[in-house]
Image (tube, rainbow, N blue to C red):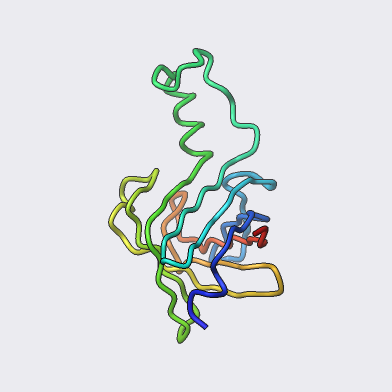
Length: 144
């Protein structure tokens, strides 16, 4: 199968954190926006954001107040790079060249995948988020 199933543009449907106790939280809100794209050459790009993030009062993205910068950062995630598909364990690895979160630059972020009709569910291995261990569930729908 390989890459063929991934190639295209996908719109974010939901983004959840699931804790070991089965509690579900929505770190970017219950109605987030986002897109992830995979091309036939092994390149990928993904972005997600909280809807209705507050605008900076100054109108200058280099002159935001600390609280404005924090809200903007915490309400947005973006990265791009290459991807590799492992059909044996049903995972895709995003090999990051750029990332809003600097700690992930140069890393490989593994996601387990499930396809269902026009939808793609990506799940992380357990990871530290929000001060505790969580598994991210990001549900995408193909738009192109």
